[in-house]
Length: 149
Length: 104
Length: 283
Image 1 (spheres, each protein chain N blue to C red):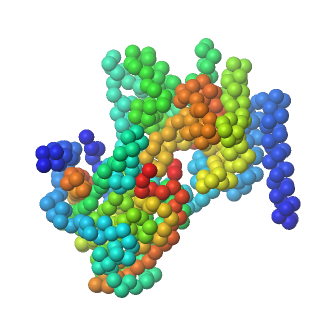
Image 2 (tube, chains in turn cyan, purple, red):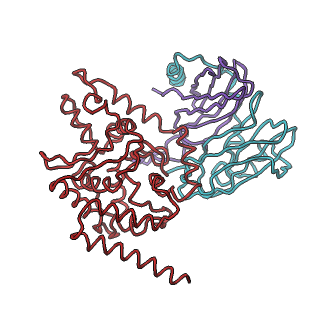
Image 3 (cartoon, rainbow over the protein chains, first blue to last red):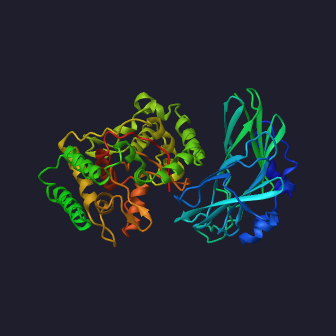
């Protein structure tokens, strides 16, 4: 407990001078079960992504050949109305669920980030909108794997 | 002592591109120490929240599969000069961090 | 032209270029002639690539790779290391002086002049040696050329002050030419268990694959340094030379060794005219 408290104080100290956003809600929101699933089908089920509809309205930008699997830039724009969440999966990662983005309000259903891929695989993106799930995917080749030494 | 995160906001009319880089090891738990062969424990940001003038706009759940020193870019609507963007994150050790930027 | 004739003609060109360089060396040892020969050879190999693009190494051959590079460089994950270097650069010594006091222009637009030949000491001086000379002059401890956390991060920042400057190496005297020649000989010498020379990969087979690595041409290589491989692991030029020697199963020379200084002198001269950029992403 002491060590954790010290860690938290250290981190808060590190952002001294900047106002802190409320942090009390964050602990409850991480879907541990889904992120620990090791099979792609199970991680889809875990986040409730069922009855997937293939969609051409999701712009998924990934490299064809990742220069380095430890840092693969990915960008997603959803053109599906009322996009509420986007789930990102790297099918062959030890745990395929990579990230979940929830667009609460006043943001475009858009994000860019950088992910790790252990080996060549499909990157799948699932969009939840109006209770339905839409998906697209792209193959990404990986020569230098990015998950561990 | 952790470096603060970097936030860059570029506003075009009422759309603001918010980009950030957070200094965090995002350890997968699969790496081993070169010298000892011991596993480096998993240590990664699990949740992140972005607020606009105090109101939550984006919630992010990350995993060990997000790259080290993670990058995030999102697009805010209805942005005005003087508005405040705040970021707060928490990792699997319960440590927290964040930052703030004012839209120009 | 049928594929076999095409291939033969390429082989002929390769052989000719190699012969000129290897056996013509005693005849035309002029650095400028070397540089022209390298440029001619590569412009023939990579007809669609403008010279300025060579600074990206093998990424110059792939828009897919360049796109990732640009995306990562927009907000580099190694910014923290550059900032560490900045703090080292700006921190006053015990006597109150700083690194900026040791260099022209406060250290701005100087790196392209290194390495240079020091007549009095009959040796090649690299930028990193310049940094250590500054420390010595000011009574401070020298930095280890092979230490990422000190010399590495210091150059990761200090070299950015010369971003955009054209490489501008001079080989102006007999003594300088000898060092240039030593570097040139190393470049063409087969080493290690794999018995390959720098030239084998980065001249003859530039643009070809060696396992999963696309080989970069010699021209373009030393201008963008240090690099952060995978966005994480800092390599100065000498550390990269070491890594290459290890890959050939040769015992590497030390960072800051005379062998590497001379090699860097030769290597950098060939790159005259290309713009420097420090602290870049590589795979």
